[in-house]
Length: 137
Image (cartoon, rainbow, N blue to C red; front, side, top):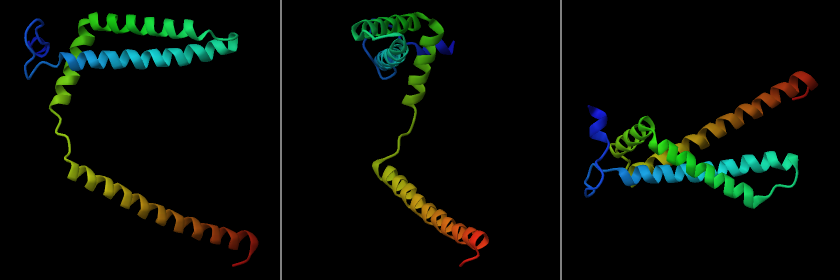
């Protein structure tokens, strides 16, 4: 089965196909983002009910996020999906510095050209509408 090949065995040395540390990092970052969002949402809701207690909100957000990360880690389907994502990302061919620079320059040049064209259309349209509404040129 393909899924069995993607999930590395524990207890051995890490080889080229072992992405466990990246999956762990993904869960950690997800837990931190979740804690931040939970804190912001709960502090906003609590603000309307009264003065928020930041210590309680931060503690509850961190605990709930940690519990969520552990529960998701224990779910075989979610864990398999996480390993599949990391495996696919390892196969991505990232652009070189030269390719990235060329792409950035192209985006900047196209943005400037489109801005100039839209600016000219705006000036033309303003002139036409002034001519129609006010009868002056």
